[in-house]
Length: 472
Image 1 (tube, rainbow, N blue to C red):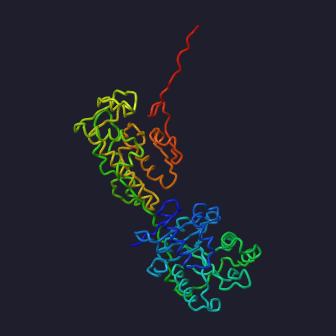
Image 2 (image 1 turned 90 degrees about the vertical axis):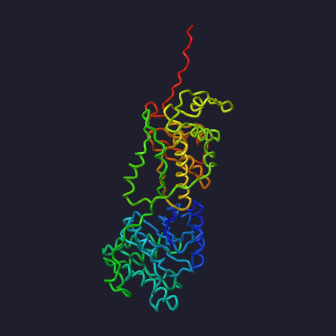
């Protein structure tokens, strides 16, 4: 079973491995490519200004991460075209529909980008231009494949003319209208050709050569070669709607055990149900079951004595009962209070977040959900969404509150930061004090909180007034 996945960069280990396999396919099958071009693919993915194109890489890989083929697409958003730079399969995977699946995906992506056409080069399929019979048959097979989609070489121009006298077997420029049926406008084709020759072949094509090729586009619309291998009525004219990579959805399947029907408790299970009712019909999400993770991920963010207290205190509260903090002693880590009713205030920052039998169980499952989402990202998925309650962004390193017991996003960020810098964007109405407390003195995790003013939004602003001056 294969999946086609987009690679955005080589930050994650899984993407580093995938990109290395792509580069190995290029080295083994295309000896004429400049090694520097292969080595800089990762840099070009991260920096579109490197080649003045936005590079898009798709790989077809097995479930175990073995790359079976890839396609490298260049996008020019201002001129509104895409250029298929490379499409190849592993040497042991010729055929099998991999190339077709990749080209379908490239067409879908191009259509989603709202370009006016997809272009690429293909070596000549005439014996006069390609005397090697083996290579000639390969070229004919390629152009036969592309004709099935209506993509044909541009003719009656100087695009195939040699740059240097010794150049031979010059490629066709092929145009795919992506099923639109619109003719290729001369001005558009000229802009595309200039961009390709000046950017992709910078340093090889002299300015005079580029000007001559561009000027050779005289027909409007530009002529395409008549169908040679496929009957026009058999052409695949419809581009299927883009197959969006689904977002991993991890829902806390134990969130509803934690609901308190007292004291205006507002953190309600209906929140999860309401969100699911909106997002599930979109078809953009795939459910992923939460995986269990060890406690070491909690204690990487929260102090061990705090984690131990929550687990122990929740287990000691009778079923159906809740313990609320009402005394807040000084937080002296060397001398914590012993009375349970006082100890809850030692670890809590408000008077309305209860300790009860299910609080720890639900909160611990939320942590597993957040870490499962992070694991999905490390496994190569672009987006993962952990829909969980109880929430977590008010939980600090040594305290809970605001209906938050463990800081789920901070735990996930800690898990991810082993592979690079992480940013937390907190868009809750209330201040994300927990993330600030945990990461304030660290440079590897950036925390940004957008929230209401604390004069009227939790957490409440504490104003310390100066002592009144003594007169006289």
